[in-house]
Amino acid sequence: MPESPESKGSKGKGKDISRGPGSLNEGIRLYRLKRWELALKELLAVNSSRFGPEENAELAYYLGLCYTKMERYDDALLYLEQVVTGGHNTLRIYQCRMALAYIYAITKRSRMAEFELRRLANSGFESAQLYTTLAYAAWLQKRYKQSVEYYEKALDLDGNNATALNGLGYVLVDTDIDLRRGLKCCKKAVDLKPQSPAYQDSLGWAYYKNGEFLEARTWLRRAMEGAPHLQEIRDHFKTVTG
Image (cartoon, rainbow, N blue to C red; front, side, top):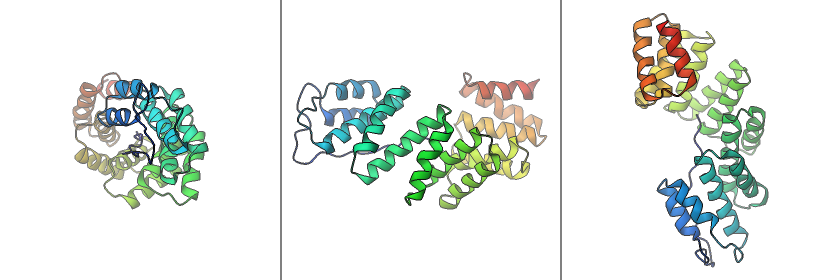
């Protein structure tokens, strides 16, 4: 699954961005410490009445990221779209479009995700993350061959991108496009991130599709232990174990 973008943010220029009951700098610090709820509380308390456009965009950006981390996606969209429509920082707009695409993809609004990503690609912002998110959106729409093409583009840019390797491997085996290659990709993804239940699940499913049932049960059992709440893992485990 694509991850929401991270950013160091800016310190502001010529403005006291710590003015008021809340502090933008403190909110950013808490965000970097992954203390999402505290960061959100701090940022919501900021008095932005004296902020210029740059500081307001910075505040909206971090509010959007906090809401994304807390899976409050409708609130996140509100703030991230403010940055995209009213901001002037090209890099920050790119980061927000990636975050928007991520939210649209995981909330099954795959066409909207693809729209955001295509705008980035047409503007020359190519990255492995962009193509893995495009691939995921294509997979949601059952456009499997196009999904494979996007994952391959991601790997052209970053041959050790675990997300792309896992996604490509899973699509190849789940759709029977190339079982052996799919298994190879899933193995490499697990080598790169051995503790990921999602990657363990893909590898177990790849072994199952290749007829290697003992290995399939071993890896799917590990995935179940790591993420028993994920329905797809439970479905795979049930299928393989009968």
